[in-house]
Length: 387
Image (cartoon, rainbow, N blue to C red):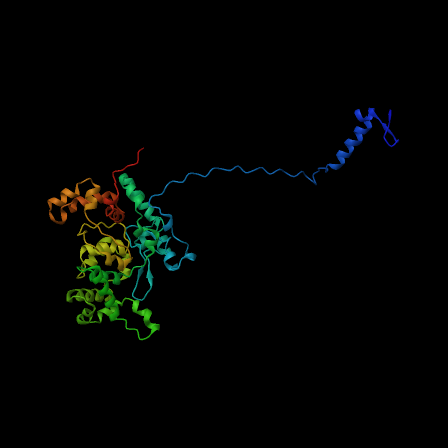
């Protein structure tokens, strides 16, 4: 053992052998202390398992949908100011039937399909069992159009078809009001048609106080109009013939010959037959009503489609449209400028037979196809994405 003296005179003993080489006893004592610090693991106190980190999977690529606008996505019923209309987003839908909710003169709403009808056997109800809903039928329609003609894809991707989107199919339609509006708008300007309609409603609503002022917005019922003479109706600015047309239409609704229930249950052919029998309603007007009022999706009109019908559509659902045969002629690659220069009346761009022939493959969604034909000249449909 070495002995050293510090500055204050005290002796310091250093055991170099112990510092450099620990003894066996020291090693045993150190090992025992380490064992005491470790918790004894037994069946009563098992060792905690180490949680494995979950493997993060990359998101699956989503297929780009045709005709999708995020800003037009349906809102939930709880967040919508019009809960009644929003609740119609998931109704069963079928292209050959009325997909719009129809309003009766008493204010009740009728639907083509209710829960019982959708689940019942077609042999009992007379309805085909639907495979689509008002939420996804436009997607089905656009997919079908592109499948039949891939060149339609750029057109569909650019223009969102609001008429047959979930919100459009939830819009209510009063058949009597819509058809009356169609008659009022015939052969007059838009401003004149709006003025006539306001005066017509005013004939049946003269509120005496503010509490009844809201009633002035209501369109008269068929029974109210049928009870009036032609001279009274002409005070709204209607011609004598138009007043007769509207009175005759009101009588058919008042007697039940025409009704919202009939328009719900009738086939496309029956709707055309019943309504064209009414004076003042031609084939074109009825086809436009079936397409944009009733929201039937397999209507193709070959009539005088160059006519503006903004106010007829306003009476149904607020949409505007202007259709011409030029759309389909341009879609088929015809030079519409040369065809226009040649003349030849309303069939100068395309014959009725050709229109029916070329649109047949787009059934049962020819209403959607017709809507897109109005917009052909706004998009270069010959631009096809390179493979």
